[in-house]
Length: 306
Image (cartoon, rainbow, N blue to C red; front, top):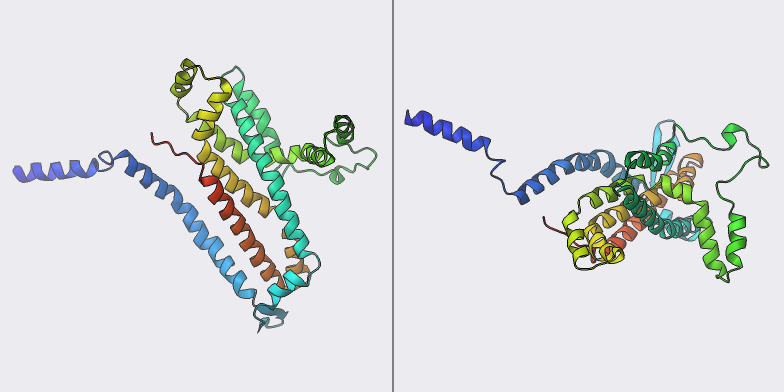
């Protein structure tokens, strides 16, 4: 009888293992579980191509009847891409400039929209749908260019009349560099919104995770809405800002025009080794920029333990 009770108690202990686990360990456990698919994807689909890219970059490859032939050239492909190729360096600088220009705007717009959608008002679901429609339209299935619908230049229209905006702003005495930045932002506003969908969701989840009691205490203490935003909202969503920044940087680098240049060099011109070296250089530059930006922003990140 005692042996039966001991076995029963042991079974009960095994079943209550997860329930008896501290909350901090549960968070670590579920974090590891959610990271397993990502880690498998990195190992299976990403790590292999990266290693092969760096391997191919030190060879002069040519395709024959019996497959590829390899001629070891060391760092000559890297030297050619950086010092001889007429367009590669320019494309890299353009990709960096577009990233520096677009990423802060994406984060600002996505946070601003997320705060609007997080408000407590009637029809909130409808307005969320309206803001996410451009993201759905940006998919490949519904992406229709002006040429696809056979519109000429005379009949095609842009979303915003930038010339009128420039004429109005230029009369205010604002420097031309600032005016050009504003007009570029207005021209790219549709693209910015369509590429900020993931960031909006991340910020919206972060805003919903902030306890309303923090705002109530702040209002009792006499804080204004701006002070609540600076002292409560920004610190509480700083981890989400870091995540969105890393995602936006990676997405901007992936969609840059230099990817088409590398593709044409590799497959159209059949310069496989040179294309691999261009990919390797661009990959290292992207990783370096992301690491530097992460190191800078992470210093101001506030982690709140509930």
